[in-house]
Length: 93
Image 1 (cartoon, rainbow, N blue to C red):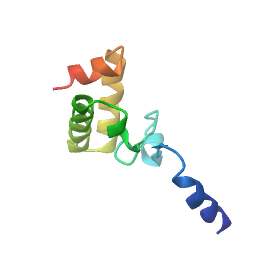
Image 2 (cartoon, rainbow, N blue to C red):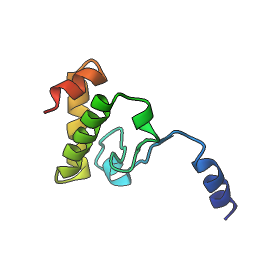
Image 3 (cartoon, one colour):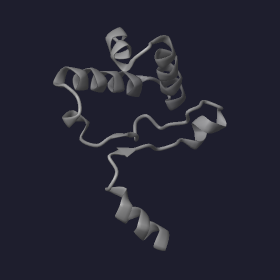
Image 4 (spheres, rainbow, N blue to C red):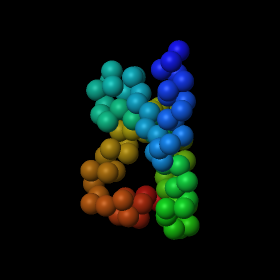
């Protein structure tokens, strides 16, 4: 119970939440990050409107895939093919 209290107290102090997914880890897909749940708070203040729209579009694409495993695998492959986040977003259509 005390752990929950401490967690709730510190939960809102960070600017990024990363959630791991046990099923992805069991499938040996690493990093086993739950893409839908994870994210940066107030990211719209950190990026240009154009970039944030591209990121949100890319997230919608990943969310439309059949499974978390498929979405994560697709993201990992896309990252490996590019040298920067900017290139990743540019290549996504």
